[in-house]
Length: 277
Image (cartoon, rainbow, N blue to C red; front, side, top):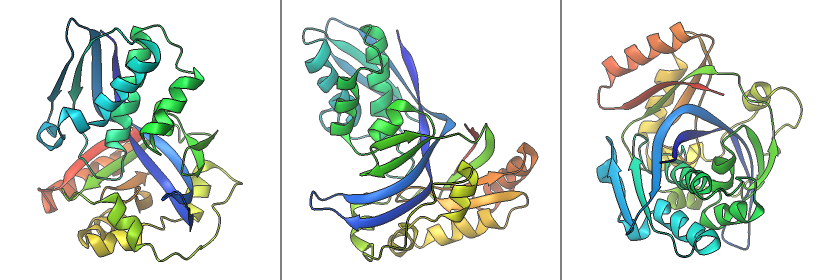
């Protein structure tokens, strides 16, 4: 039974350059991935089934509208029209949280199905399916540090962060991506640097969706303030369209100390101590 991790996706920086005629936005972003996330298991079966477990299982939508099942359907049409699959999603990432939970789950489903049916992950048709499922799914399918342009799905490999300690924090508030993009002010504040290390490029950049996300969910300001005030923080920023924020740390001790402080001060918030590759 192939099993794949669906790691949390982080946008170290996210520059919104323009609105596009196709309803998307022209973006520049630095994708990196945590070592922790959801888990997807698939197996051949006599009849299709979809099971969701884990702490965020109740937040997953109906199977007919879930990205995992849409990924399974698209894969089956392309590569295995007569197959049936039993899929289990172990859901540990909050939904609508800016860390690509649904996109990562769909990508992990495609990778697991590819293993089950001996389809190379590099197969161009698989990347086409990923792009059809959503703008973040191609990056999640690759699962490694990339520079994204266009909708975010024109990807170039970049160096990762080498297992840098990180803390992810979500105030248990779901934020609509569409609502955040709708509040973007339309101002092009410039390109993301194409020189320097990945971390240096991130630190010189910004997240253009942070102000509109804070308008939708003001608690994001509180999350960022707490993260930025912790000892040993290298960078604190919101990921994607929110509401999850992250902090990168100089060392594991600083990250773990920050996790304890935030868990004590805001016990209702979701926290994940991890590393970023």
